[in-house]
Image (tube, rainbow, N blue to C red; front, side, top):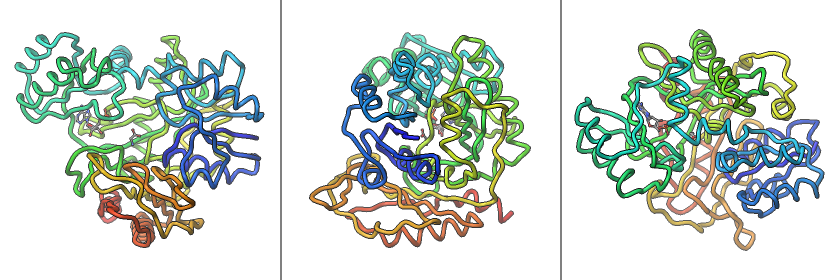
Length: 425
Ligand code: AMP
Ligand code: GLY
């Protein structure tokens, strides 16, 4: 099988590394890729917005399956365009990707089908949103409904904060049309987890639950980032909790989408808050998580190409929670100092030559400059280690990370600690 992956981050590199393990995979391609992906597959520099050029590339290279990494091509309808050409692709059609593209849509769907989530209201008028905020208790959460590259969610401790948030989104239009509708919702307390279910339109397969670390500093302090590290499985989601999530959230979401005429194929990413009352949806995404995927795939005791191909083909024969392998995996993100705010790129990187079975060096924001691998983004590299315990996986990843050098390198010191605490209880 020839497989093309679309995207350029750590998630895409991890997908390529896992797919490379399959005896069924003959050749891997990636558009556009990064310095690491470039050594593991054939890359081409085509803009992800140019669906026609991507389709031509697929035809020219006899590609059997295209796997979409990021959300933007999905919400732009790349799956719809491939379907018109009868080409095989992994991911939801545009109408199903609405689950991520419109928080207003996903909140209304959850309400209609009784899927547990935070109480909410939707506003299009600033004055009405203001009045609502003045009457409601804080903290409260203000969200631009549309895609805002992970920046459209503002947790507001006080009325002053929430009024500033709606003024930025609804008056200053900082997220442009993504802020035409604003969701204001109840602040939920609990611990967060990420659950991924791959659907073929009829049945689904649930992968190992993971936990992300969104804040930039240790102890979940500081501004949110794309994710500073992850681990899987997340012990917070034990077998019993996974059963509740499957029955109350995953299954009803796929059923609801089918019922709405928006059958969901591809991976559904449920960002969850495990509250006192049980699991509730924070948000849905229509793609694999980054950096969760990096920690989940090394634990997968199945051929990833079978899962992605089966989803695209609609050939699953039953639903399941994939069994745990008993191993633990931790992904540590090495970032450019200053990220998620201003940072510099173009620095040479050393110490990344060796990946082995237990520790992968995954590239996120890297480029090649005169034959040298350099930093090219906020999140630069991922060190991903697998071991018999989470504590051991953490030690391996941090030991390996210590040997990687580039100017201004920054990483959190406490990735995995919340999980390790569970095992030590
Ligand atoms: P999202 O992009 O919707 O996942 O939100 C980003 C982050 O904001 C989440 O990971 C949570 O930490 C936080 N968040 C979003 N919605 C809520 C909520 N209703 N209650 C508490 N925290 C939230
Ligand atoms: N790790 C969160 C995300 O991929 O959106």
